[in-house]
Length: 278
Image (spheres, rainbow, N blue to C red):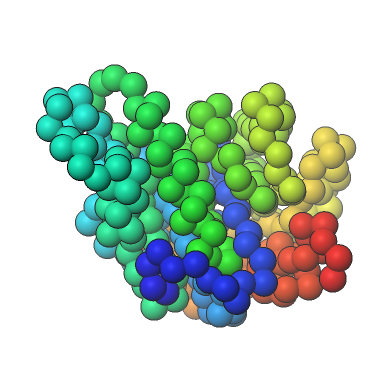
């Protein structure tokens, strides 16, 4: 897709954030959702790695040369040292460089947030980033964000304009409790998601009813389970892209079902998911 050009043919704009405690499989979930959307639809997709560790590029087979964090760090340094000329508005400079940092793939675009470096307050630069990313996401039918582990991204409100929050859990009590804390913190900082859903990763499929009931008791919706998958484990261990997984892999088939339930493969389901009339 041509950079910076707003789409006029879009049916809906959907922003999805993948969250959860560390180690539950957020990046694997985000990568498999990316694979399913690109293989099963022609939707314009932006994938954002918002985790400073940046594992998602490897999972997608993407090479990242420049991150948003490195751009923001350099701009802040120029401002602090007085070397920024001021001839061009800071937002215009930052926006132009972020477009340059976009990795264009034949099936999706990719942006790595990375991390900022150095001491001091990045409040002004972060405000600019939020505005620019809000604008950028409007150029795509689906924006998928792989968030950092824990709750910091919620407390900083980097999920401000997310439609669907996916919380990934693994078979541990800590993951279950983290999911409840993420839900509660979202309410405390007044982030309004249209939907909050849960995906269970590395669960036996026959636990779906039991786990679904546990989350239903907390007024949360379990959208599906991803089973343990020997082939997926081998691909992850080799550091190979998850596009190399066999299409009949249990994990791939499970995520395809989850994507269908999320409405990523059907316009009608998407409209219903977001509470619109069909």
